[in-house]
Image (cartoon, rainbow, N blue to C red; front, top):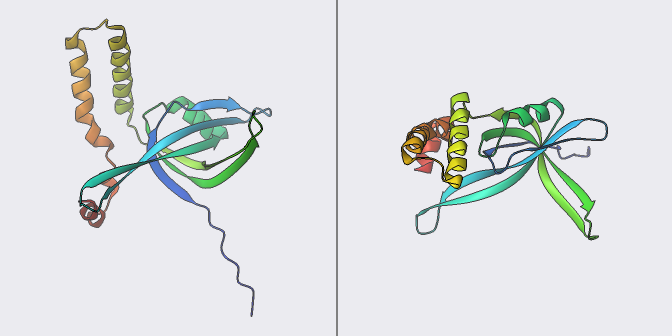
Length: 170
């Protein structure tokens, strides 16, 4: 009987929002690399039939041209769809302890924010910055926030679900 070998499959697709701005750097060989993490939410019904939400934080690493694109186009809060593979890294920390991490090495990243949505997020960030310094009148900030609230439905992942999947979520 021939030896059977288990196929080696390492493929991940995940969608989420950036938890921080991407960190861009170059290796000693001048190879671009960017690291960031995303929060991916999962909704489910608990034993009392109440909707709950669970958040999974996932580290992402992208190399070369993909890293350059991420540096130019991504900021905290932006939505992405990442296609890649799991990889693990081990290192020794400054205090001598062995450390390890599992992250996604991205093959492709789809930027899900529309251009006008990106501009709206930047406007809200500006408003938040001004609010912190207390230099803005309430009449200035309300239209920007109202407009942003109206646009949130456009970023819903529900539009990617089939009718059957939508019914299961309800």
